[in-house]
Image 1 (cartoon, helix red, strand yellow):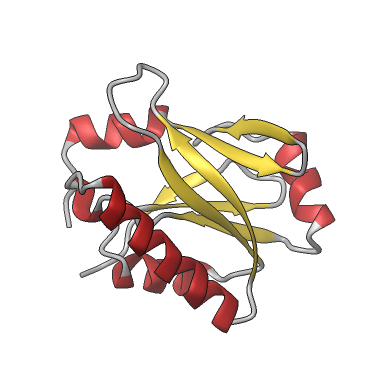
Image 2 (cartoon, helix red, strand yellow):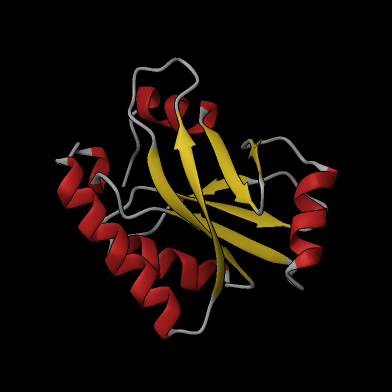
Length: 140
């Protein structure tokens, strides 16, 4: 699936905020960070995937529908025994409403993309220790 340039730019510009205990901080696509590596270390992981269930295929849904989809995502992650933190994808320009997301630790890229397909997402953010977070796109 080809992603429109405008949508790709929006994904790349997003502040991926991690709710990390009492702190909130953002990671960014293309920007490696010791803070990201420390987060992975604290969760005994070499990688993580950020995924949301909100707004499938970037089609804005009602808040109640997005909340129900998020609850289902959380249930799937718990059933699989995966460790995750909550977060939020925020548009720094304020044009898009923030999307609740999960930062899932120790999940392979293939499994993260499978979850993205299940929830009809255009992309996930894949994080590897020592590397910049990057967008990855599920195949149809």
